[in-house]
Picture 1 (cartoon, rainbow, N blue to C red):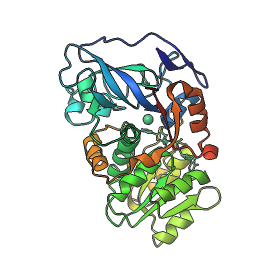
Picture 2: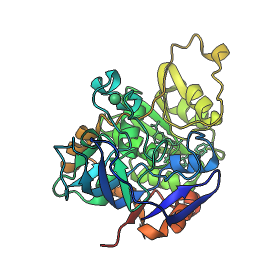
Picture 3: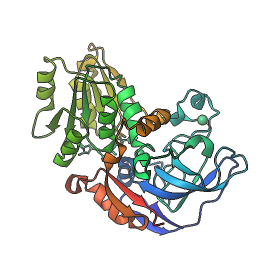
Length: 348
Ligand SMILES: NC(=O)c1ccc[n+]([C@@H]2O[C@H](COP(=O)([O-])OP(=O)(O)OC[C@H]3O[C@@H](n4cnc5c(N)ncnc54)[C@H](O)[C@@H]3O)[C@@H](O)[C@H]2O)c1
Ligand SMILES: [Zn+2]
Ligand SMILES: [Zn+2]
C-alpha cells in the first residue's frame, strides 16, 4: 500500500510500504476512506515529539471501512464503516475503566501515528478495535465525522471541560487553529458571556468569528491583557484555554486568568514553559493539562446527529489520498492559505 512515512524532523515521504496485518486477536484492519492532518503532526515534523521514530506512518484521525478483524473482535464486522478515534483503549486497565483512555496502561492511549503506524495510509491496523472505533451514524458525512477523531473531543475535553466553562463566563482561547476553534464551538454549548479568540494570523481570527468568538485579538498588534481587562472590569478571564503549545502562549494564558480562574492547557509543548509562581502563588488559580481521552465522543456524536454542532465548518480543503505533499503544504501554511482542516479522501 501507499503511506505517509516520517523520516526525522522536516522529512516525510508518500511511499510504498507493506500492508498492515492483524497481529493481535483484538485488532482490525481498516481501509482509510477519509483522513486529515493534525497540528500535532506538524509538531512531530518539527521534532517536538521525539518518541516518533524514523519510518513511522503518521496520522491519528480517519473514517474507514473494516476489511479484516482479529479472532476476538465480535462487535464490528467486515464492511462496517467506522470512525477511528485518535485514542486507542484496551478497555480493561484501571484508567480505561475510569474513561481515562488517553492514559491507557494496557497498550492503548495515543499510539496511532505516534508509537505504531497511523492513518495517513491506504490501510491501518487499529488495536482494541471494538473500543477504539465508533460506527458511522446515519445521515452524517465523513467530513463531519472525521472532526470527532481528535479536534472536537480535544477542544471539548481538554479545553472546555477541564477549564470548567460555566454560563456567563468570559472565556479566552489562545490559538484559533482547529483545536482552538473546536474549544470555541464546545464553549458555546455552555453559554459564556464572551468568548475572546487570540491569534497571530488574520485568517484564523476571521475563522474564530465565524465559529462564534465575540471578540478577536490580534496578538502582536493589540495587547490581549488590555482587551481582557476592559471586558472584565480589570479582573481577568474566568477561563483561559491555551491551544498553541508555545512557552509564551502558556504564560499569556496564566496572566490573562482572573484570581480564582482556570487555565486549561491543550497545546503540545516541545519546550519548557515558565510558571511564574512569584506572581501567581496567591491568586488561587487552577491549571489543568491533558491528553484527550475521547470519552466525550458519544456525546459529540449525539450533538452532531442532532445538528447542535456544525463540524463541517472545519473543512476548508479537499485532496485525494495521494496528494499528501500538497495537503501538508497547504495545512502547514495556514496563515496564507486559510486552511483549517484539510481532508484527503480515497478515490472510490
Ligand atoms: N492535548 C491534546 O490532547 C491535543 C490533541 C490535539 C492537538 N493538540 C495540540 O493543540 C495545539 C493546537 O492544535 P491545532 O491543530 O489547532 O494547531 P495549529 O498549529 O493549526 O494552530 C495553532 C494556532 O496558534 C496560533 N499561534 C501561534 N503562535 C501564537 C501566538 N504567539 N499567539 C497567538 N496565537 C498563536 C497560530 O497562528 C495557529 O492559528 C497544538 O499544540 C496541538 O499539538 C493537543
Ligand atoms: Zn491530533
Ligand atoms: Zn487501557
